[in-house]
Length: 304
Image (cartoon, rainbow, N blue to C red; front, side, top):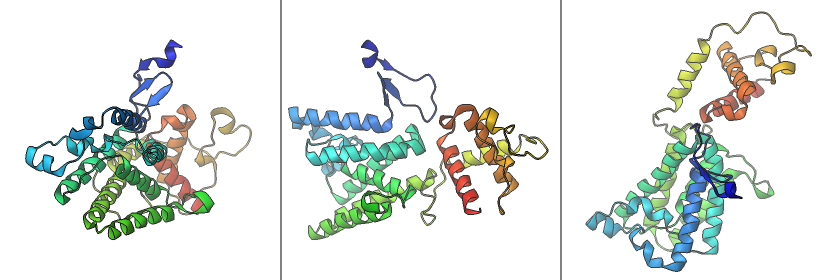
């Protein structure tokens, strides 16, 4: 029973690890934000005035230099049914995006989605509070990565995202709140640019990619190291009960016929990733390596 409520920090610090654990609960970036937002609803119920200094108040930021408001405004959540739905949506899709980026990059994405729209809110003189704008941005990042994922009634993700954004724009037009339309586009732009720069949204090449430390450059470094490992053995492997699949797990792609158009470099890189999965499982791959494996797999399937 005591272990159920214990606190621990993982010994490993890979991107797939949580920040810490509470009993059996892995607390990554998504779960941490959800816990803080849920706690804020209880605090609101006890004393709403506690959050007066956390809401984004453009006047307070401009005149009194209360810059912390640029960061704290998403943590102010009024206890309503819509707030619960917003937190649930953020939890579901936030875990998906965090699984692709890792906890640190996802935390930086959330920070940009908070600070940049916050600055825009100060310029446009718009007060902000609550998780809803961040939740919408994270949902759109998921859609940018999986635009054809099917939701209820088989509707693709891109259509759901378009309807949601369109409804918000119509609402702001009806309320004559042009400034909030601008703020919405700023939030979407930050989400798209950051996701693209971190290696997501590969299906949307028209979004500019800003150089990102540890992003595509890191992938090039890994590919260079794998290509310098030297020959992986000569001869031709004939599939059968004596092949690598019966001893070490997945069959190396070099044992299979190469589809036309697949380069030797691609084949070597795929072999290295499959070897790593065989040794450590899927959890042994970084987020960049998983995306690269997915890209290579798609190319192999498309050329069959």
